[in-house]
Length: 141
Image (tube, rainbow, N blue to C red):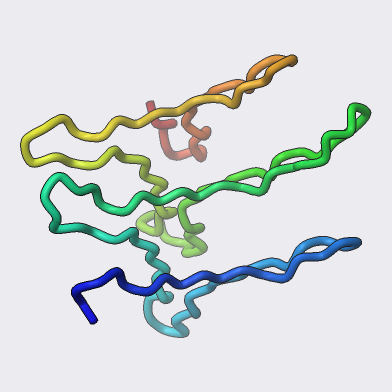
């Protein structure tokens, strides 16, 4: 019935009491002589008046142990463009793009790069940098 809420899909790995929790691995397969498969995760759109498209959160795991000597550490979130293994100058690594959403009439979405908060220690460092170039190139700005 398209007039009511549609169903949700929930994927969860196994929980462990004594060992590590189960992992979830999603991979588009390789292309032997053509492009590799794409992975696209898109939140839902809406056509409703004064409604908002679905949000997306990608978060690394929480280190939830509260031990004062050495509790749990939070997991690292890494977003990386694809590696280019070709041996030609035109073979470039994939871009990593962080971009706020467009808007037809109102303000566009912002981009926020922020270190984490600490209630007792120092906050994390925030860096934006370009990697060094090879001997025949120049480093980006």
